[in-house]
Image 1 (cartoon, helix red, strand yellow):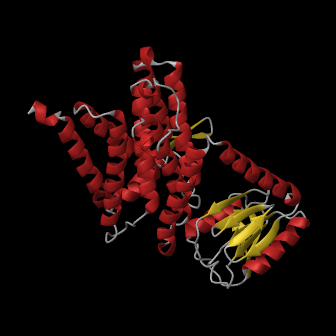
Image 2: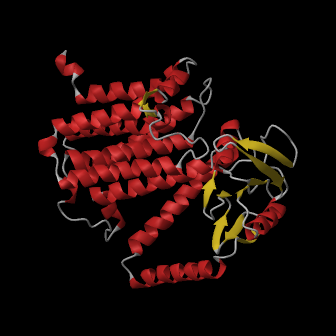
Image 3: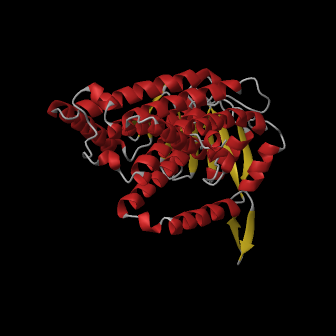
Length: 401
């Protein structure tokens, strides 16, 4: 009985069953809100709210550190810091409108769940004397299959939705688990032959565990980024296609970057972009057309984009209808004026309580009134440029149909 319970294979199979059953448990209306309430649990100390979940996490880290103090070295500290950096990046490129904190259990459980899956895969495959490169490949493929199947099961479930962003988070979680295993648990054994990420032949990437892990990390981050800004049904497939295209371009450039002509070509592109930014930096939106916009000399194709009143910008979820939570996030960012570019023909900018093209609302965070204008892209861009020249605090969300 003991051998059955502690068998690497049986534990892996049991855990996969748990992952598959989780959506069926989560779909219960009382459990999902309960997890959200747990994430917000806090107590007051000297007038400051202390969140319970991050506090428990820090206590857990301290306990783990004390238990394993004799195994801690500089390499493991850097590796753990790198993992935290990956999680931070994942948090900041995904679910922008939701604005979930990093300690939100429901939003970030994917990282924890699939890190554990990676460890169980590692235990089982290592017991079969599988090479590290194959462990990394098999874990990556198993994660994609399990996560995609899990999301498809949710298509017809009450209170659950199919979300490519969740698949991307699962993949990133599995990659984080592999980094944890090979860089912290094994103390960097896979780099004993050096840090050479590039290989002479394409087949070499499938044999070198470090190169393979690096490419999987790049793919996971790219996929998470595009799946988070292309969430609507009519653009979901585009997020997969764009991820494949961008990753393929990255891989080709990365693989060929040993050649001087490729380095020279990349340098020329960088110089051209820097010159363009230098010429148009003091201007705002210098060109706007269907599916492309040029902002301060930077071309932005296809995607919806948000311009902040401090001059910075970011790509945001491509949608014509804003949900209530989306509007809360947008309003919290806006200081004085919010312009919603409703697309080339005006099909976007929907979701507000009223239909008026000009209306006023309240920024609840800053307790001040803000003006909202809903205009077609051409008029929105013209007004935005005019207001920016007058040093007005204006936020623009531009939708490409």
